[in-house]
Length: 130
Image (cartoon, rainbow, N blue to C red; front, side, top):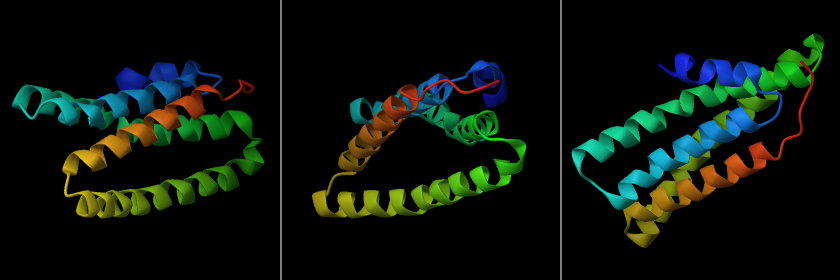
C-alpha cells in the first residue's frame, strides 16, 4: 500500500511537497462522491482517501528533519495533539454542518476545501535540513 506509493516521496522531500501531494490526493478522494455515487468512482474515492494514513508518516519525517533529535519527542507530541484534535473536531463539525444543511454533500465539500487549504499551506513550507 501506502508505503510503496508515498515512502520514497516522503523520504526525499525536504519541504512540504510530499505532505501537500498527500493532502491533495485525499482531497480528490473526498471530492469524488460530490460528482458520482456509482460503485467504481466510490471505490476510487476510498482508495485515494486511504492515503490519509501517510499524513502521519509525512509529518513525522518533517519533524525529524526540522528538529534536533533531542526535540523529536516534543515535536511529534505537539503534532499528535493537533492530529487528535482534528480527528475529534473534524467529524463533529462536519456532522453539525450536515445536520444544519440537510446535505451530506456539504460535509464533503467543506472537507475538500479544508484538505485543499492544508495542501496549499504544506506546499508553502520552506526546505529543511537533511
